[in-house]
Image 1: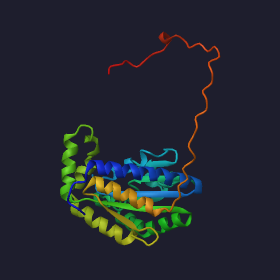
Image 2: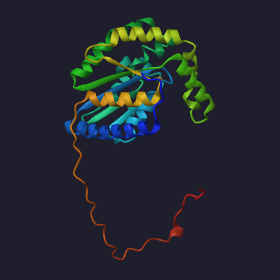
Image 3: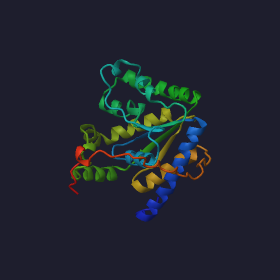
Length: 261
């Protein structure tokens, strides 16, 4: 990867083109009644959220959903591990983006001791079969791992500390993970050795450069699902209904937002 910083105008131009293609892909998914699941995993501050935001900002939220589950409830902790993810899987014509997924068990739960050794080993054994089952059911499953160096992660953590609008991104869990860098690395290696399967391989995104990571990931996603351009013919707006004596209520009867700006 080039060490030069990506030109902002070049990045924005390429991103705009890719987002047009994403709209075409969405129409194809809808037309062909495809079911698409995209999993985004990686270290904290690796840039997963930024990529997801650029994918979804031009798409119909009814057809493209983001799933970012919080801490499991006491009831969910007693369920089959994969159970709470199943209701969020797509129906025909939908694409679902998992901002972290069932791989929490192989990462944060393993490193932080939130699951037992038996639960962890069972996950590594059953996860490939779970994913093969999804694929056999007709789901297109694509998995991305965002790789970031410890130096770049440190810079991003510091930037979040200094920015009041991003401070919420630094949870106590994020801070704890910072001190367990090697443990997370080892957990990731074990996870890959068990779940980098032929039917659903891991695709690693070099995420030290956010802009390049976004363009590369979106471009790759588009290449994973062959699609055709189903852009409809230009729309002609119908003539607006004529005024046939309609009288608006007095403006003074309405409550307006104060115009401070």
